[in-house]
Image 1: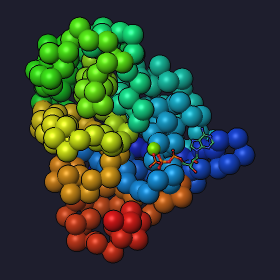
Image 2: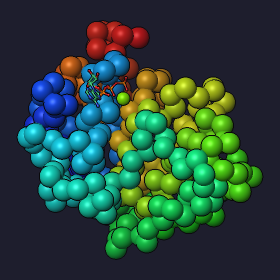
Image 3: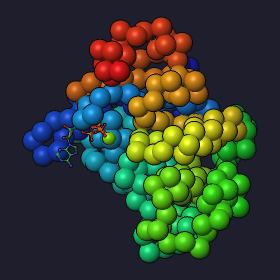
Image 4: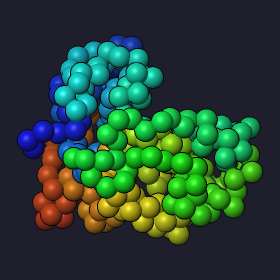
Length: 246
Ligand SMILES: Nc1ncnc2c1ncn2[C@@H]1O[C@H](COP(=O)(O)OP(=O)(O)OP(=O)(O)O)[C@@H](O)[C@H]1O
Ligand SMILES: [Mg+2]
């Protein structure tokens, strides 16, 4: 890839003495959806946490639009345009849907959603989030703790969008959700991608991922063991069976 938006090189990370990442390399192009696949416990969340600065990487580089982010605090990495939808969703339980959305709002950065990135991915408002997820509009006064799992995931995505991220990162986009809600999340992600939003996604639904995402990286025991396009992944049932176990 000529000039990736996110470029991760040789990322290593550990929890105490237990090393979990052993030199992860991956990249996301501008306007692309890239997935990170792998079995449970292989290091997907740790990779995302290391990119976001929530786990301090031991070695390696995380470059966003050519700028080095490794070693910076999470808030600065957020300012550089990375928005995370965490695995545990982390909706504020005592705040209403609307208050949750406003809590993370950030003005669009210069050039976000325009020019070379294409589309209208920037400039998020609560109204635009409610348009994307009409179910949330009906729950705008409801405390986070009383939302269903699906509504919490929509809110978590909406909250990340309110930071006007250049790169949206989703850790387990549809895990534990009912089929109908999953479908809604996938269609929302397809619309975001069509609008030019760059996305790094972790999920286990290969069929949905190969339909929407451009490229995939498979991680095994903290190392990237396979990467390729959706076409290549669909044509590689052996890689799926060996590394993802489906
Ligand atoms: N806070 C922690 N302290 C110690 N070890 C951890 C911690 N978090 C994760 N690990 C270990 O690091 C390894 C990678 O975990 P990680 O959560 O990154 O995997 P994952 O691919 O996201 O898995 P899953 O599919 O279950 O979400 C696992 O062996 C896990 O037990
Ligand atoms: Mg995980």
